[in-house]
Each structure stands twice: as C-alpha cells, then as structure tokens.
Image (spheres, rainbow, N blue to C red):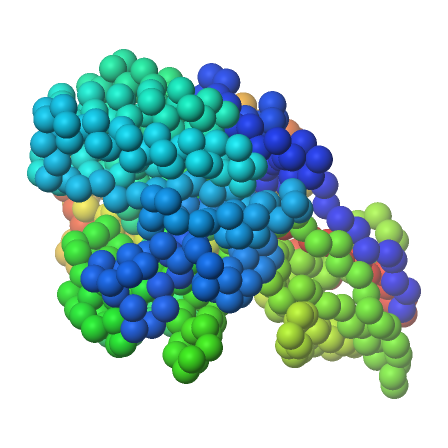
Length: 630
C-alpha cells in the first residue's frame, strides 16, 4: 500500500476578515451594507459573553454583570483562550459600570492585534424612562457620551449597543419619543467617537425598523435579536426590503435543554448544534445583507431562573424550538460546573465544536504514522480536538486519478476500513486499518439531516409539513404532509452540493391512514439536479425510477408511489436513483404530495446517499486525507 501526501480542498473559507496588521487602529466604519475595520470588510463571528459565576445574581448584587474589571482576570484567562480557539472575533457584553477601570479587560481582548476579540459595549437602560422628559434624556446622553469618550481610542472597542430590547418593554418601540431619544444619544456618541459603531439592540421587530429607519439618522446599523427556531425564515429578505443599513444579529441561538426529555439534549446537545449550523449557514449565505451575528451565549447562567446556586429548568418561554420552549439557564456553548473557590469549570457542548468547525479555516490533515502488519495497512492521523466537526475524509485510489471516499467524520463507510479513535488534551487520534480482502458493501453516510424526523424534528428540511407522533415506522415520529387539495403540492426537500457524474439514491417509506382518492392524488420521491444559475437539469441517466413526465420540471421520480391502490395503514417503500449531468452544482431530494384532492400522508426513514463503488486496487492502493471544513 502506498500513501500520497495530504490534500487540502480550496475555496471553502467562510469569511475573509481583518486579522493581523490591518487591525492595529481599530477604526470601524460603514460602507453601504458593509461594516469595515480599518478599511477592510468585517464579518462578525460573535459570542454573547456574560461569565456570571455560580452563586451570583447579576440582577441583585454587584458587580451587576460587569465582570470586566480588576479581580476577574481569571475568568478572561479561562474564556478568551476558548473564544480564540473557536475562531470568534467579537464578544458582545451586557454589564458596564460607568467610570470603572476596564483597561486590563480591553487590553486582553485586543491581545496586541493577535486574534483580537472586538467588544460590543452594552448597558441596560431603564425601560420605564419618561422619554419625553428632557432632563431624563439629558442624563442618558451624558452617561453614554462619557462611556464613548472614555473608550473611543481603544482598538478593542467595536462599538456600542444602547440598551437591550428596551423597545420590547412598556410599548417603547411604538413611541416616537423613545426613538428620538435613541437617535439623540447615538448622535452625541458619534460626535465624540466617530471611529466606533453605534446601534440599539432591539427585538425581532421589523415593523419598527420599517417605520423608524429614515428617522434614525445617527444609527450606523440595526441590531436585532432573532429567535425563530432552527432557521431565520424570510427574515433577511424582509429586512432588506425595509432598510439599507448594515445589519448584525446581536442575539440568536438554540437552548440545550429538552423540556420533553426533562434534561439536556442527548450527545452533548447535538440537536442544538445542528440548529446552529443551519442558522450560521443562513447568516453566511446572506452576507450581502447581514454582517454576521452574536451567538447567545458563551456559558450557562444559573441566576436567571430560581436560585443562582442551582441549575434550574422551570417551564420556559414559548419558542419555536423542537420542545416548544426556551429555557433561560441553558443557552451556553459551555455547561458550567462548580469548582469551589476557583473559577467555575466549563465543559464544551456540541455547539462549541460545530462553531469552531465553521469559523476556523480547515486544518491541513496529515498522516502521523503508517505501517504494515500481517499484510494489513495501518495509518494514523490526528484531528485538533476543537475541529473534530470539520469534514475530514479518507479516500482511496488505484491510479491517483479517481478517488473514492471510504471514511469520513471519523466513521468508516467501507467494510475494508476499520477506524478507532482516542482523545488527548489537544487532539483526536485516529487509527485506520485497511483490509482489501474484507467482504461487504460500502455504506455511505445519509446526506439527509433528520431523515427519521426524531425527536419530533424537521430540522434541515424545507417543508410545509411537520413532525408527527400519530404514526411512525422507526422511533416515535414521522413527517406529516396535510393538504386541502387543489394541487398546492405540499412537499419537503433538502439540497446538497453535487458534481457531474455523481450518482445519488433517495429512498424512504410512505403511509396513508385512509384510502386515497382515485384521481391525481399520490406521493412520490424525486431527485432534481441544478446548475450554478439554479436551472433544473435532466439527469444524465436513471438507474431506478423514471424521468419526470413534464419536461418543464426535469428530474428523476420514483415509480413506486403512494396512491389509491396502496394498502391503508402500511408503510410503502419507494426509491429513485440517478446520475448528475454536466454542469451540476447542486442536488435536491424531494418528498412530494401531489394533491388534486385533500389528504394526509406520512413519510419516514428517509435516506439519500451518494452511490459509490470501491475501486479494484488489487495489491496496491493510494490513500489521501481531504478536509473540506464545514
């Protein structure tokens, strides 16, 4: 067996941001919808940061959330290393005592320009303020100008967020005097700190953005806090239609507590990590409108519900999450553990690793050791522990031309490869053994997220349907598509990058609880290939299924369908398999309810895979490692 050198896939950097020599001045400005740092485009990879120790109630006693002064250095030492490791470049804070000495904190954040953590300064404003009272507004102007003046020259300071969701309290967002006060404060701050950004952190209130945008002449950008579940929906297009100002989502996230389970989500809270991947991907794909965002939050805060000495989970606020709730004490990238008189101990959840995989450049994988024992090839390589979620694949070739993935994400796809892992403080150590004579069929990974719709989840699917516990083939849920008829075509689909010549199989099970009408009412599975312009392409060939009957909507469709002849109360298997044609850049996998008449249909155990065949390598083979990031 022979080894090639490791390869690094190009073209996968998430953002080109200003690190290094160009950040020494710390001058932030606006150009159109873009934020610029010292003249270069800057995308916010932010984390909301309020490291409240166990036992301290931020709302009831000093320092009232201001953990950014002398005496709290141990917290920054613990946390800044983690934030830099995951690739964050902004921290958004909440407590800030006017007149306190924050120099050491800001210096540590700036770090002499090396992986600087730029700071968005935030301070609470009393929502009960009489905004029409000149003296009251003057006092706020004086306070915020003092903050801006004291920080205007520090390169770590990105800017200022005036208040936190003050618009959502006391009807403030619909008061002209409130917005006039915010604009006046912002203007006074910009006058003394023109190289820093000024905004107002508000709720998901696009109606207020629309009605007040033209009046807020002193705001550099809008800062909205969005909690819409595992996606932003139409938020970005809706925002773009209402304002031409830059946008930063200054809070978004997915809590780690599963109210249905009565504890943290399984596997290190991997479901919230999946949700964060979808959320960040949407932010990344809408960077023409949004300049990034701040994930809520760095670590759990035990003071928010009940005793600050206990990790409480009372019924949360109603939220569009899989369990229907948002639980205040469970939002952290890190869970917090009591550590006596020392700073609390932190344990990373799955979301930390997922963000690190997306925010950091792909590391260059390399074989650490190779060997041969009893004619079996053994290879070892290591993955930095914080980048374990980057997509590293082991590929095999017989001729250095055609390469086939045989293992990925630390899991083997092929019976000829056995993988095992162990962890050190800094790396995940991977051992791979290749046995060419091993029998079996490769099992490529399922490309579909939550194809089993567990635990009551449609995350990753674009769909008008919902996860339902009424009936299921595996587990406790399936996808339900409801229709009132009239060819509204309820559906669900997921899309993935693809290339010409790749072959894909889509399969799953369909179910009807009643006899379906004997008209054009049926369900099918469909594979659609697209080019870079989004144009649907006819498949190069179809191994299972048939071509779409309508050439306007080309694709490969399953022949086995759920229709009037299907047995009631039984799961019907269906599949389709096709090869991507020339110019393919994307493949989409569809579940479609063709609904001339009203119906309810269920779908479960959905799987989409790239069909691969192990090359005939004989007694010699080449291997390589590929990292495509996240």
